[in-house]
Image (cartoon, rainbow over all chains, first blue to last red; front, side):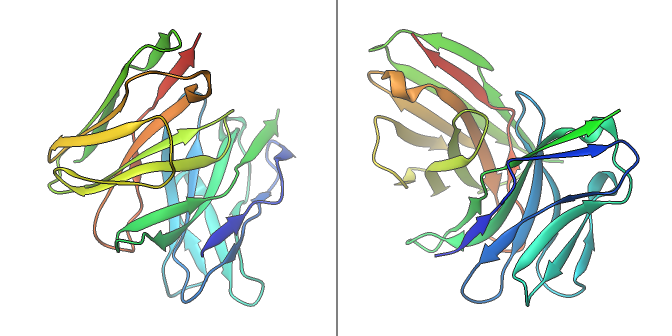
Length: 116
Length: 113
């Protein structure tokens, strides 16, 4: 079965500093990977995805993610953190249900706190 | 553009009462629909998914049920709520295409007293 792991419950970073939120994956076949962000009492918002091609993918709000096949990682990055980036971040991988429908397996989430 | 709506935003119910949460999608046809539960602001657990009207699949055994009476309407129900049903319920829609992300509603926070 496909799975993703987010090894850090929380990441603290100073405003203006670069940030990294880690994600590792375990899949059979080619991975379809996604990052989402969740603000308090809101649904998840899609940030970016890796399907194939360039290992560095760019997404919304200045975020990017680096796909590394040898390390089975898909870390989320941003060159300069903003206080408004403080939120809960989820990594996800596409999986298949027993009936052939796509479903998504989510990590446990990493809380990002950007300090002013 | 596509939008997804969930209501109510918050709900407080006594143990043993029934439940009905509704989700509707606009701007797309024949979406795949999903219900998730998020406990304690953390990981998401897939509860149900649907690929069409009347087609419901359950991922985990539980006290809840789901229905899809119309193409873009997805309902989560219970006949008798348990304390353990408390949580944040999220509806999402997706397409049949594997490279597309899911899109989420803003959720319903359910508290059982």
